[in-house]
Image 1 (cartoon, rainbow, N blue to C red):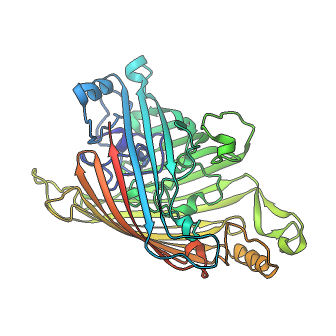
Image 2: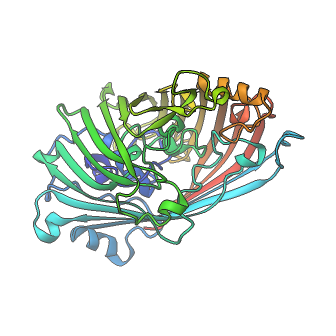
Image 3: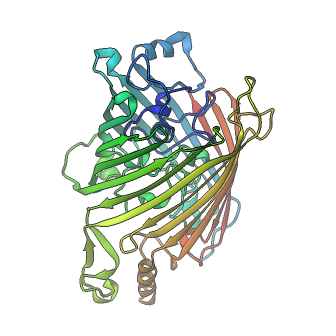
Length: 485
């Protein structure tokens, strides 16, 4: 991808939270999913030279199956047009039997997938509008995850599931971006996904499990933070006061039913009928390099939501609503926050030019905290290791492990205890009291050939759905990612 849009562009949440399975942000042989772009744009320091010959950061070109057919890709990019087309497919099968006599569960397998197309246009090249570009992504999705078969709804076994409207073409994002001061300032507006820019990382989708892939699950707990494949109206401003730091803030109009098939199936529903508030995220980032070549990315952020959210335990007078029957208390201001870090600790070998290669060991870890009065997930902690090029004969392959711990809000637990005592149905599709859950994944990313990644994996669900009454589950699966253009 070299010095591409994926590295420099300080663009808005163009695509989605999917990402490339590698422990460094860049590299010519990187896998680039259409949803990876915003994460690359955020998490690389501003380049030390002016962008030429256009002030719009250059569009990247991954090592796709059809890398440059008949010179077409190069011709399009010379004329200001960048196109990416890829497909992701994720399969998972339970090797453990589900809990008996609890719910309608069964042992089985499932498959989920997505095809996506992004279109980036440099209007400085086409119409001489200095620094202006537009970005659009559409997608189609199919299938369902396997975790529902054994009763888990907290951490899906596949990141690809739902939200695509069950239509051939679903609009994810379409927005314009103006790049100023040689790339040090970016202003973007349009239909965007907040969590493609905020609380994002290109390392997350080294994994298949939805607890981490796309974005840590707690970041989107209340359903009002837009994330792939749903976008909403938004504005984002990002600047770099120093070469290896950034600050970004945004304003996103929250929409009721943003992920609902019934209310926004195609993604082309642009009216304001369901706008019910705003989200105001703020994030600070720092990208140091240890010994000049070991890259790190550190970020801290907070977001305010003004859409009305119901208290998960109390009524209008501060009493348990399940006992009084009084309407739940409404909160018109709630906060969620995050701290996320990754650091490359070692480089295994040098390339043929004597420079440090992408091969090496990277660690990632983070913590997310939500308002315990309105969120199901009170907090989430995660950590993982990614080893790229472990074997000299396989320089692009990755070995990766990750775990995630999710703590359920105390109010949810108290409410479910009261409901169970009354023999009533529990919220969140629970069949027992939800307290905490752990999920883990280990995988091997095999680059079969240019543009094709094959990734077998194993997952473990401890306390599925956060419940102690459900049996732990082990899954085996396989992910493929094919970059066509």
